[in-house]
Image (cartoon, rainbow, N blue to C red; front, top):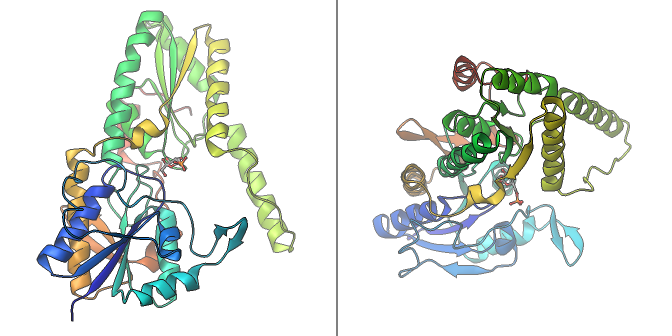
Length: 372
Ligand code: F6P
């Protein structure tokens, strides 16, 4: 009986998504003679039954394309805005899944997508996921596709920012994406030779950073590059965040519902923190400071060779698992191969940088200040 597969991309776009779609599609259709159909804009398209044919030459020429030909969204099956109200669309998704007689739904996404896929698994759907994000913060996999490309983009940006820094004797504060994890900032900071690297995993003090910059200045280098993760916090901000989390937990326990929706867009919160840090460093060091926020540049354009290779490996491994009818798993990158990880072991977990990680040691060995 010919298997029929559905595929969707969910969460932030990322380099390598189209390479992964191609890997799944070519292996399923070409090698295993399966049928495959795309759903548009993540789980929302599945809930609204908006499909895209992937037959014919739809998969040709997309290996090198950024973004996702299917479109994506951050919509969650159980918590989806519909005409101004929030609805649980899980049953609609299950209905469409069965109406199309799908044997498996392949979901390409980050941490949130793993959780959403597990919910659909519990609804009785056959699901397989691939770990995608430039943040590299998905548990259970060595790496996610998107990370290597973003690492290259952020590193090149830091390289280029050195010109203005040493020409104008300036502090350049460059904000790097990564959500709550510091992988992208630490990796690009080391590769780009940043003098200071601030990551969420190590709350910093402005004084420590200012001291390091002043020390460089006294040593004849009156300029510094500060790579700051968008999720990095000062020790005060970290303590305030921990206190707020504890208060929310206590309130929830006593049945009081606290509105947790942040009034400000996360990106605005990040930018305000970064601008404030730059101002504080300018005040404490006497050097001019300028800010560059890399933002979505880090997600744009053609995927690196490494990401194309990784996405193709994971995509074709997913086809093998479908053929073997091994469902309910994430296709994790493991060395040169892959490992099928049960979604129960992945969903709801992230992957932050352990404080004893070799990259942190390497940064310290070359004299990088980490804000502590
Ligand atoms: O998860 C990938 C990511 O780029 C994060 O690094 C960043 O914080 C977030 O997405 C931005 O989300 P959006 O594209 O929805 O603004």
